[in-house]
Length: 295
Image (spheres, rainbow, N blue to C red):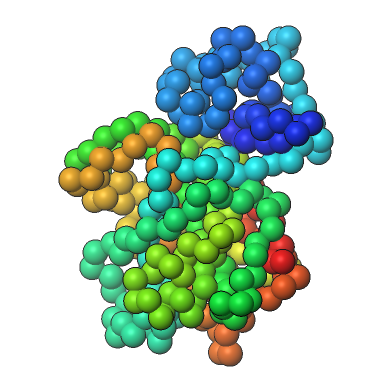
């Protein structure tokens, strides 16, 4: 199942995609789900709500379906419960291309590099990226697979990790590189307004088996820049969840960005940073594509 948040006639709704017909099941039209008004509510509702949705997707009922072309897709979780948890340098080729930027001599990463990204509001698959030209000329893109946590837990074992996942989405970890370097810690350079894009859907974990092996790529103005597979993560998804949860409680709706492969703008010589008018496309197999333009 693919879940989304969308605008229809000016009203924010949540739904599930019926892929065969390109129609979105409007969850507000299902009386059993009357109390569910956001993806976060859906995650909290558990398996019973998912069974109801599956039934309406697979059978002819009186639930309302809306053509995808008639809605505006938003980020599946537009207002996250807390900062996005990110991993840095989690693909070997990206660690290699980042050496001159990070001043790291080695590309073998012994422990995950975690950092936080503030995003009070996440832009959706068609949202506009502010260029922030008054403070940066080094705006960069990073396509990443995002994990959405579905169950609260701490000290989770590797074997248990999948039980704590709700699903997966695409996240563009946009970055102001000059600010990232200037402040040493990465928070500021990662957290400017609109520098987080997510969508178009959250793919429920049931359609993406472990180990997760998905094609991932980004393109700028239709020039493919990043092209890899999530199987190349240095620290895989079960390890990330287990390691991160040691002494830290993961909560329902937490978003974990798992890292980006080589091909980001700063990796070129000279660098290929984003500029106003650029089209930024990020795609992951089985989830879809988000396309954002730089203002």
